[in-house]
Length: 246
Image (cartoon, rainbow, N blue to C red):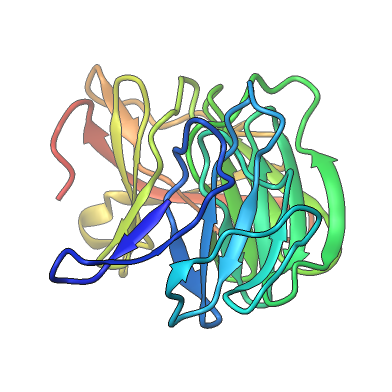
């Protein structure tokens, strides 16, 4: 991996990545987090790099930190997904359906591998966080809601019913998700104008209520606030399938 200034001059370089790097670098707590995790390589590292690095900042054999690298882990990189820092913790979803948590500043393990579900096929989309919860969408189309913090707790599993591989986008107070055939704009309704916003109480295991009848091909745009007292609500409005999200 190499870093360049705005004039195209090399500022620093780092050896010791896997042969294919997909996760996006990101910054949090004054550190730059970079990782790679090609499944065919023995080395699948995560690095937390301090600002101001210069020259060759590669680690020597048997060393996990130096003047430019605050901490590293040789097996924390994921193949497709990008890790997430939320609060004090770094959450790493592995492609085969495990979640790990570490202290973002020091790399100390908070909890080890936790399997989200034994029947999930894998994860390609990167996670996101909101209101004290971590969200991770599987390729099966299920969004797993995990309690943020030092203790792992799965709060809910919300199915959309078809494959999800794209990472969601967040803009203008909305979450935009794309499945194999549908684009969803997920937001909290402001007052339920025109009666088009509806609330459907469902059980923790998944939607159990039927969507009110509408035109063929209509989908429900949903917002998941997580689980509370064994229930959650889907809030949204019906929208024609394939229509561009506003």
